[in-house]
Length: 292
Length: 335
Image 1: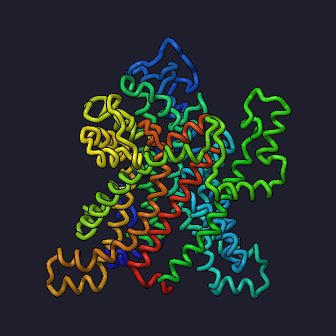
Image 2: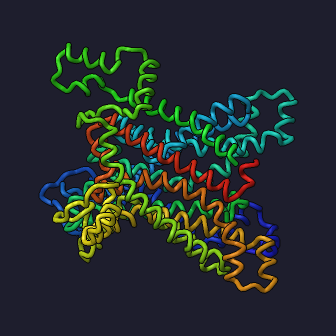
Image 3: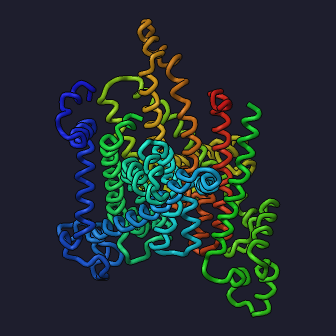
């Protein structure tokens, strides 16, 4: 959208105007909003969409072809694949939230402390960040996960620990940019305590780019954790988890294609959905990054 | 320039040391007794004691780390819990297969991703722009392990035009080993049927591994191109009445490709990580498969061996791209 037409609408509140323009710039992004909303609804209230129990075995109904009774068929243990895909949304949401909480948490602390204090504190923290970034991400996550042992909790810790450096760098950059702004110096001159100054001013200003980043990362985190579960490190049966389900369906791939296809498709859609929403959010909250 | 290269090499040393500290700490984390793992389930208390002493497990942690480090320097990555073989020797066998796969995926990424970005980024059509963006988001969002299975289902299962998995057909004998990369070895030996078979086996895993990277590189090149096409000197060239082709080739391309070089180094990290998933799907006998067997048995020396070797490779490639970048853009070396 051109600058002129943007200016005409400037009477509307700024954030709303920017949101509308962000959506107009990315019409396909609306599809993303729909996918993400559907994902949240399924994750929060899966029982509203299926009458089956996602973890109930029914050996009489093994490997049933998709039908009106079992939309996505059943798996080798007779569990309803549709139900497991829906409940898988809940697993994915939980995992992604925890991982991003860990990653942004560590990233915020490291980035803020490094940026604010500077000097040798900055040097040590940033060199540590360099070390973590030196690993290929998925390989580090696998190594940490293997060292902690199998299980979804271990996977969340592993991915979270491997993911924080980009946040630390991002937050540190923001802190450095804000640090010398007059209002922060004013707060310091008035005798504000370091921690309070940081939290009140610096933190708040670094928020928008972090939110954009988090949205764009949801997909990557979902892919990584599902990948670890696929390898057998993360979710253990019978937990409905998409990566694990894809792995379990492998042995039946050529004849019972539905086992692996649907959970993978769900993961794919959710990742694309979050990427699309991230695109809108970036235009909305961080317009300077548009087209970069 | 020499000074820059030297400085960059020097700065890699502490990072590398840090990497070994992390792998060492991770090796210590696993619940369970490493002496028990090494000595086997039925070892007696005395045998355990011997193993403990031999492995230096009775020493303080920092001594153990220094020992670990000095072993690493000598190329000793420890002994695999599951196979009881030297991890280093096993990696030597498995690494070429992974190298072959990631190299081909890398080449695909560059020869498809970069031109795609340049072609779509040098025009002005908003329609093309948003479709590139959309397709790249789809490509990046594709779960590697799922895409591989879907490709298997379609191309090996339904259409039956490509092999399901493995590096060679069951009836084909591997070419005489030189590099252990079958495509090259078959080429060296002049075994054309083997070569064709090896290439056929490479297509699905390499494409699976590359798709997300192609999407990502195309998107970055596309954005860099758009940015450059708006610059004054490009507009001047256009205003002079130069044909579009000349403007793109002579004025825009070189500058647009600069940021792309750095990204390509970073893609290697994704390729190495992704290869663990892809190798697992296509039964590709590389370090990904080796790591997977290690994961299955929680074989920490094997997993850390893979972690270290891939990280060193990743660091080396990033070092090389940084140096290449400095050569391409002399401003870097002086800053």
